[in-house]
Structure formats: structure tokens, C-alpha cells
Length: 89
Image (cartoon, rainbow, N blue to C red; front, side, top):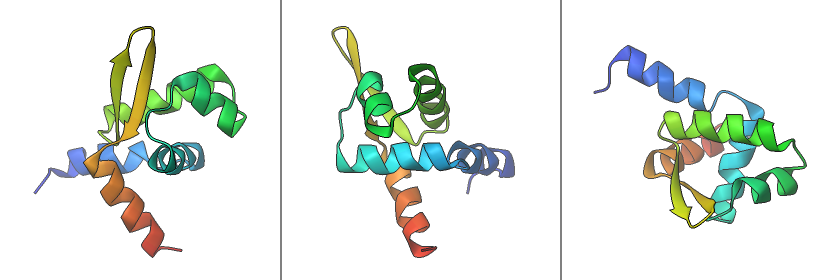
């Protein structure tokens, strides 16, 4: 089992409505760039970058470099979190 601090890091990773929105978006449309995410959610590019950085740091999304762009996808842990969140609906 993960330590309590590690669990806290993962929970804080998705403890924001925008980050949950980003995870749901990437679940439906994997491989989006940061610009795509910002445009689809109608949020500032810098804000999208901050949220994706936090999600990546928490291990909830992955980043794959494609030439000049970076493709974002929900990680296995992120999929587990989304499944958990759906149980709360």
C-alpha cells in the first residue's frame, strides 16, 4: 500500500474541478495537446498547463512528445480515479 503522503499527492492531483474536467476530456479524446485542451475547455493556456502539470506530477495523466507538441492521455491510475469518481455521482 502507498504511504499516506503518496496517497495525499494523488488525491490532491484530482481535487479540483478543472483537473477532473481535463481527465474526463482526455478519457474521451486521448492525445490532445495543451492548446487543444485549453480551447475545448475554454480556459487560459497557462491555466491548462498548470493543471496538466499537476495531473502529470500526481501520475494521473501521461505526456508523450510528438515533435513540437505534447500529447496527453489518462494514465492507468487516472482511469481508476475516474472510475471511482463515477461511483460518487
